[in-house]
Length: 103
Image 1 (tube, rainbow, N blue to C red):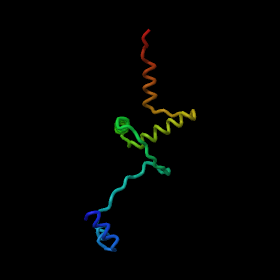
Image 2 (cartoon, rainbow, N blue to C red):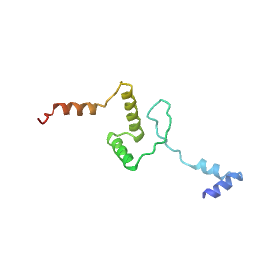
Image 3 (cartoon, rainbow, N blue to C red):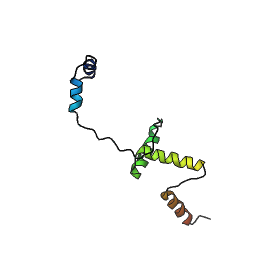
Image 4 (cartoon, rainbow, N blue to C red):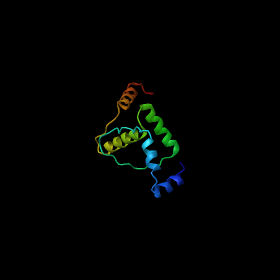
């Protein structure tokens, strides 16, 4: 059914839309990754930046917004001087300390 036809039928009180909805298959909605109430904000990013974030999230096996939220929370913790760091960052830092430096 075309959108204009559907709109006209709706305004005319036609039951065809209700029948169409009744016949539709149930949709699986994603399960939220937190029980904490969330606020949705729009952020404009250059395409290259977004692609880098998407690749980083994919490499970690998490969603883009989950990774962005983690980065924001880590940045805020750093402002509060109660910083949290990932285990991978700790390992990289320790590995860098064990390498000899050029004299």
